[in-house]
Image (cartoon, helix red, strand yellow):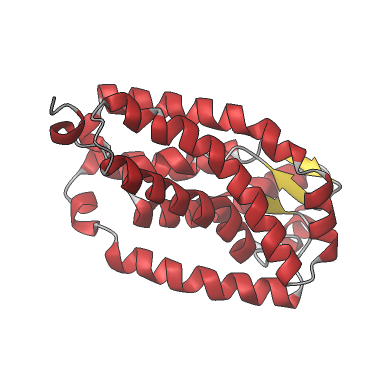
Length: 235
């Protein structure tokens, strides 16, 4: 989800205090060597950034306050890992704002559209649209890795489908918590009154993530960082 109204000071600084350390950790622990030696992986990473930003244009606006859209961060974390999922997500948010420039210019002059280029909501959008679902996906992956039932279906359906479904609820709950802690009443009321949208997003989010995870795991298992043939196909 994305904010359509700028956050207040408390919301901005709290989200920034959460975002900056996690991004520094992502940069520090991202497997850069594996990325640099694999050109195909580089192409997929950049294509994912552009595709996510394009997909996030498909938004449901809530009272001109919030925009709710498909996330697809779960499958991104499955393919690239937690660190790169965060970096891909923050880059996609910036590209999303760039995509919106020509769309605004259709209805107004370019100088006005450029004046509306605003990244003040970026820390909040990152926390809700990227950090929460990516961290949840990593927790589910950790649990699945320690489950004794070894089967590929536990990977791309347990994590990709059901994990992604639950991530929608976690994003909604995180939004309510963040807005309540920072007294962002306008955003809080909109989220509370339209929480059912997160419920409606659960199945499409799970289906799309599960489908992509299945295709990637079956056709390109070597490119899926978190999938291990020696574990899931051991029996």
